[in-house]
Image (cartoon, rainbow, N blue to C red; front, side):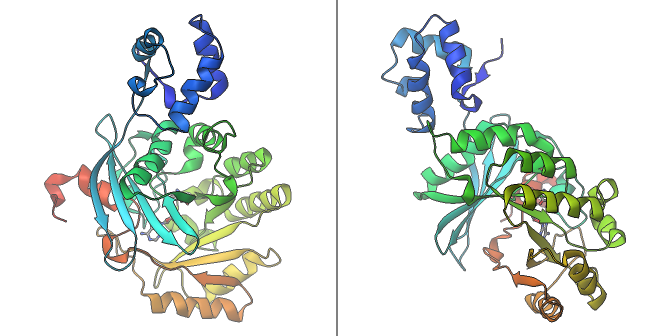
Length: 350
Ligand code: SAH
């Protein structure tokens, strides 16, 4: 029988499992706190649990773990990029960044991605599987342990499309914010999506208080469909309606990500299309010069991003050029994993 992934279980699920074993319900609380507050890595460390029950737990459940496979520290700032190996030998990336108010972590939600955005390294390495809630929690725990820091904010902007693994991501957020466990405020969490409309609407209805970021990258259907296949399924008008619904339902402003790609989406017409798309929304646009990926020709300098910013400002759009952290360690998602997947092509050369 396959062992159940205990770190992905909610407290009520754990209570049901423990009482089914004929044990009192409060034992579930002890186990849950050991896992989510003390963050033990083995049943042997649960010293408040009788040894007979610990032995039983050991046969029925597993506590997953992650291993640091590679770690790149930026010499320009405090950014550290981790390549984590999962228990089945797959890899994901997690990036630790220092911001004005503390440490923020950029998490992966899938091993690879199906969305196929033309400029993204994750698309090139292909999709393998979804991450479990425990594997998302462990990216936080292992990074805190390794770096000796306490993480105060999260962005779901690593490898994967969170809305394509929505059940596991929602459960992860539930475990993360549970008042009986980790107690992280979801106000400090940003979920970034390429624009899966039903996912945005469902998230709005849950009113979890997190920030929604939408990867826009182009304000015309022709331009966006060229670089983001998801736009063919959920075109801009539907996407913008879903964003308006998110704002009206949650009261939280949606932010838009726009990776500037010279000659692709940074003309005056592109700026005008963006201004007209966002008219009357008070939305904020985060501009970032696209990170060049070896296999693709997209590129942009910071100057190009600032030139596009000026065009937008003249049209009254609220935008900023995001600080690029860890530029020397290729902090764009998916690049380390892609190299780890294809050692015969690229080797372990960094
Ligand atoms: N799938 C989600 C979250 C992961 S990608 C999404 O699409 O939002 C996180 C962000 O990085 C997205 O805005 C994505 O479009 C952007 N991104 C991907 N590759 C990039 C690159 N090469 N340069 C700059 N941004 C990139």
